[in-house]
Amino acid sequence: MLRALLLENVHPVAAQNLRDAGIEVVERSGALDENELIESLADVQILGIRSKTQVTRKVVENAPGLLAVGTFSIGTNQIDLAAAAAHGVAVFNAPYSNTRSVVELALAEIIALTRRLTVRDKALHDGVWDKTAEGAHEVRGRTLGIIGYGNIGSQLSVLAENLGMRVVFYDAAEKLALGNAHRVETLDELLAVADAVTIHVDGRPGNAGLFGADLFDRMKPGAIFLNLSRGFVVDVAALREHILSGHLSGAAVDVFPTEPKKRGDGFASELRGLDNVILTPHVGGSTEEAQEAIGEFVSKKVRDYVQTGSTTLSVNLPNLQLEHTGVGRIMLLHRNVPGVLAAVNQVFADHGANIEAQMLATRGDLGYVVTDISDVTQRGASVKLQEMASTVRLRIRDAFERPEFPPGPAAG
Image 1: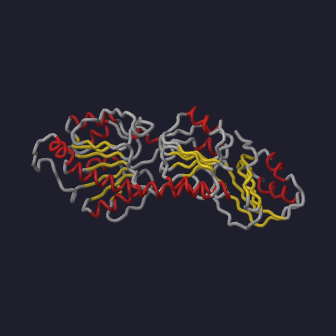
Image 2: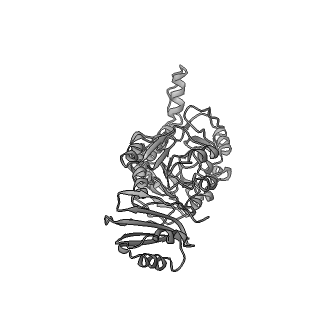
Image 3: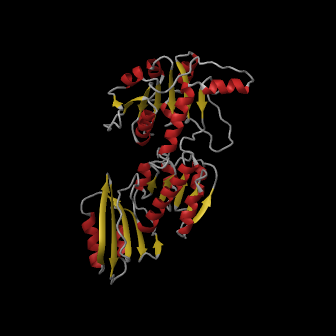
């Protein structure tokens, strides 16, 4: 029986989907460090994580039985994708499932900060009736600057316009502007006009330290700032100084450079205790609706991969999906070098195998060929395929009844 390890409170629907597929599931509430994870993966083929657990090259190299990693989140920067691919480990994420939840939180925080609701709330909790319009504004007519116009940024753009905001956005890639949003060519253009600046970039290393003191200096006096993307994108000390100086009127931060491993752990930040600053514990996508959708989506992608070899929407392997024919299936991940497909089919021919269906896809240094075969007159084809110098990982499924996973990989 295949075994899955799910960490960090993945939604129960994920475990149920895997169990329904005949997979044994072990669940643990918190994240694991590198050594703990290696030890826990000794007899595990499927790993499910969220944002805290780091799947490093060392982890991958010490988990030869690992077939797939499902990250129940948008980001994959916590996984060494190249190492996973080189060892035949498929990685799946949820690029769309929590988009709405993040967008709604951003809108709520934009309104709360612009109205200074945090300050009014604190005063009343302290027993002070501080009724005033000072510093409070409508969001209608104000300009929202969005840095990163992907799934989240573009949907935020549409809903912010529905509230009457003017939207400008900056993205390093060419993106189609939705509604009346205006694309600017430089960050300076955006910062000069935006009353609210919100970051929605991905976790690629090049985004580290993207927003520092120099960019805070260029923001409009009295503007607000939001980061619901990645903690390492923003210089937190610089943000603190610009709040204390009054240059910025407020901020909302959901992600931090260093975050606790699990619920209930202590939290320290230079931003604690500042007026009109909203701090949330990385909950942008943490609604019950989003977590259920993520659990459903990722668990089914992982299930399909281990059962049928489908790599559709894998973030690190060539993408393909071959329709079932009901016969035996050979799934070969290999180095993307000339002649592999011809060599594979020659092995099948030498062993009297009739090819019922076949599909090949490539991605960078890797190729992936899935073949359905029948009428095998000689045994030993799998041994020949495993011995090929180009083979990274070979898996076999007999007539879609019982999955068998010969030892691999043969790559480093």
